[in-house]
Amino acid sequence: MSRAEQPSRRTVLAAAVAAAVAGSAGPASADTASRTVTDTADRAPARPVDNRFWTTYAHWRGGTAKGTRAVAGARPGVAIGTPAGTADYTDPHTGKTAAWEYGTWTSPVHDLAVPATEVIASWNAHTPAGTWIQVELKGTYSDGTDTPWYVMGRWAAGDQDIRRTSVDDQSDDKSSIWTDTFAIDDPATGLRLVSYRLRLTLHRKPGAKVTPTVWRLGAMGSDVPDRFTVPASVPGLAQELTVPRYSQEIHAGQYPEYDNGGEAWCSPTSSQMIIEYWGGRLSDAQLAWVDPAFADPQVCHAARYTYDYQYAGCGNWPFNAAYAATFKGLQGVVTRLGSLTDLETLIAAGIPAITSQSFLKEELTGAGYGTSGHLMTVIGFTATGDVIANDPASPDNEAVRRVYKRREWENIWLRTKRYNAAGKVVSGTGGVCYLYFPAVPTPRQRKALAAVGVR
Image (tube, one colour):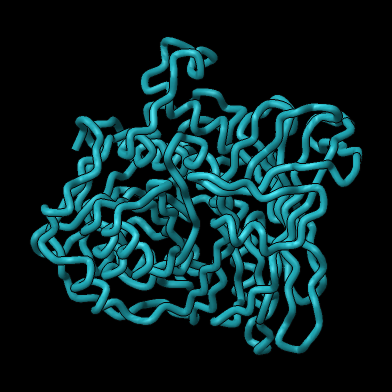
């Protein structure tokens, strides 16, 4: 999203709801942590968040399959078996109609431990050429009625078969889909979502032998209380991870067909930093389409392959997590965290995080800009507890590493309401975070992820 104090489409919609160090990448050694994961996890406050993900062979065997099959192995998943049928799809962004074989997998009903005002789905999948997937959600409200099946995304790793897209204009007068987020229209009524199912539809060209494979599917439900300020956490970690530094600003004006160019590429730029931290690399062949005069072509690639053709931007949260998972040995999720203590728990285990925040220029000392929605990569904490962030809204790669005041940073990230430059009350993200981590985490990493509610 753009760093300018301009209302992004997601921010405008969410506000409407509220109103009713450059170097080689590599995971840090666990021995460098000044506190253990257990220490930081023990201090973490309760989070009004429910995460549920399907990832194991037993999970995929436990759903309702029509034309799909569970796949065993080191990375279990679900794939097309004998297709359930063939259906036409007209791509709204190309006008092209094509027939696709399909199969579906529907999760069991998940009862939310936290009856939710918002739900964000995320997924990790392999979609070879000639395949794509659709993710839907159907829930039950606290009044006993059901939602329709909502489309949470139509996704493919490439853009040669369909254009990956969110779907606008989905509502039942109780809830709506805002790009990638299910939201109760008027939380003040007390209405909440108490359970949901997710449905995958896997597509491939008729007669093809290839299949999409989904390895992880789930959602984060939350009921974060409205707040302009949040309680201050106590610093507990001094550690910095060595994460590559990339500036979105050096790409200003490049490939304007993807959200007007690099000025708006904070999300894919942040994603690429952490992907490369974990060792993810793009081949020369994959980057051959990028103008050789452009520096850091992998950032251009990330923008193209996270772009949501309906949202008209690269800031679709689940699309970024899904992009990260296209790199060998990586997985990604979208969740919410409850405090900087949660981030300390992750950093102590060598896991950086991408956080979403919005603020006025004067609310974050040293930023030099205001924003209605911006992604940064948190890579550590100073001895006094201040946040070390790779901020892509920097003039060049060398300037990306920033240190921000802990109290200011925590508040702009975790609040759900704020005042914009015009003095109007608008929404904040309430702790939204992307987490990218190994497909096979170490015991220490697994413990840290579990401590923040991700399994």
